[in-house]
Length: 56
Image 1 (cartoon, rainbow, N blue to C red):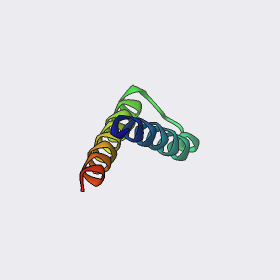
Image 2 (cartoon, one colour):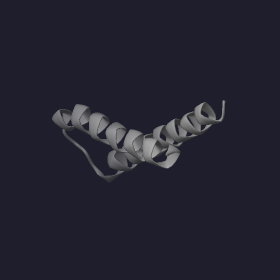
Image 3 (cartoon, helix red, strand yellow):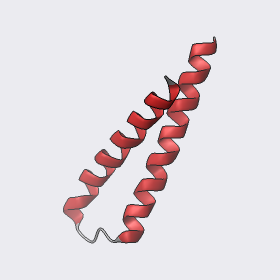
Image 4 (cartoon, rainbow, N blue to C red):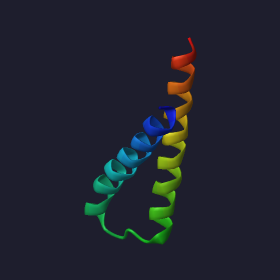
């Protein structure tokens, strides 16, 4: 279950940040890569949080 929570958090983070930055324009490959790294970090953090929550 922590993997599912992490994947959903990563996907939602990617969508939200991307949709907030898209109207600004200039979404090049560097910006997309930064958003992907932030989404990955959010997914990992959510998965770890869920795993710790389940243990206690």
